[in-house]
Length: 142
Image (cartoon, rainbow, N blue to C red; front, side, top):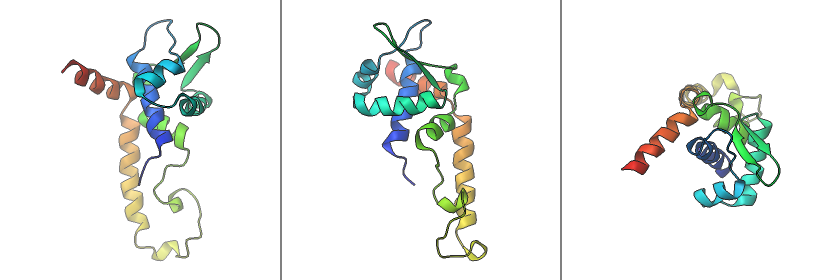
């Protein structure tokens, strides 16, 4: 199982916005891209996904930019990853009927994949953007 860069960068964006959270302050995409050393064009596409999911809002204009729509502690890693990645399951038969050539009743690995996937989902739902931001802050003060 490998997360795409889209999911990784979406989480980077959310954490960056949390780290620079200030009342009435918006962060420009250019600033985020520079701080994270990422492509502004690619971040723009990811930001659109986060906006469509209701996790960030944008304001246009000279003093425009982006901010989180909720407190970082109210946004789970799972929400961010689902917004960026869509379907996240390691094998497609966990989320949809597929024709892999094997009947589900005799598939020896589906239940194992399902159990592992449930643990990943549970953890991603429990960990928040604020949790990750706190870890980053602690590392920066060392």
